[in-house]
Image 1 (cartoon, one colour):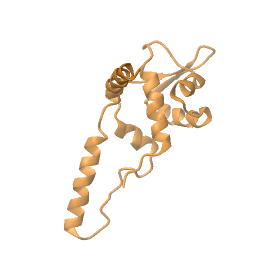
Image 2: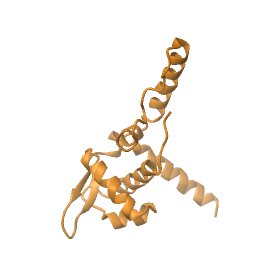
Image 3: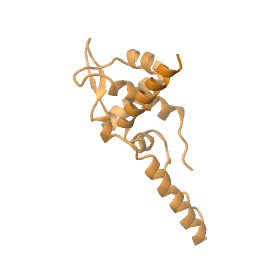
Image 4: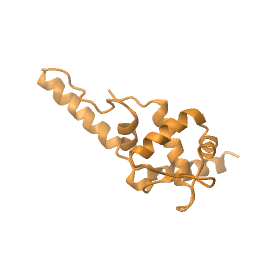
Length: 137
């Protein structure tokens, strides 16, 4: 069954921060780690993997850093899980019982639909969080 590790949670937090910057800007790993409250050493590995898979671009040099390679609306949670989690969407039904196989296939289909949410939805959650904070003062 699917599990979401800290690695994926940190990746989404980093992508959320990178999605908040202007298109021509970059963020250094240190800045992403501070903004996302993620350990920098762990984040480096995650960002390298996301870069290798075409989710991020890196710019070298003194004014270098990372930025999104594509818009958050084109990146789903499923994409990130598939990149960072081993066997996350592996075949659940390891049985010869057809009823159980159909049951687990339906469960897996539901999971795939839920995780197909684009990361651009994070902006809606940010607005909701800001709205909640305004009322809790």
